[in-house]
Image (cartoon, rainbow, N blue to C red; front, side, top):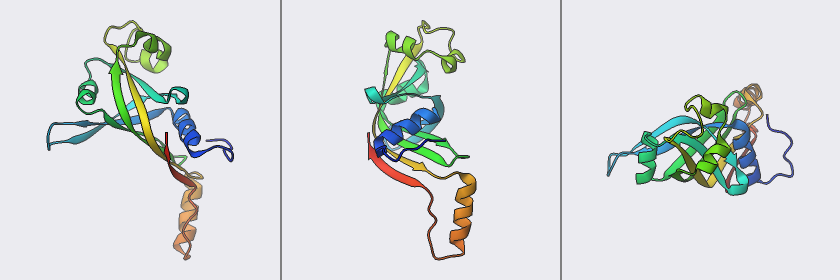
Length: 167
């Protein structure tokens, strides 16, 4: 899925993988005091490495907007299990009513939920990533073959690249 990246540093690779994967699970913290739960939901991501941000469109009345106001720490989990490629991102989120950014991000995924970028309930959710960890494996079939070969030998399977990077 991902092209040649021999000259690419780890952070650039994580940004590229997020962009190419496109959708993720956005995990927030809900609850108060000691009764905390992690809640995740699928979201269409607008990845912008130049701005050091991952954007989403959301509704002003969504539970996630309230959760983020109380606890802005989030995790974004991007993945393609068939290709065995994953990126986990830790960061801080904020919600705004930036109408210019909403119009900039407006596209097909948003049209499934809102009639136009002028919908007054539409908001921008911005995640400022702190770090990411990616796994870029050779694909599901090759991964299983390598695991099977390792199971009958003393060697560990070469499962591709894995790196934790600061974004």
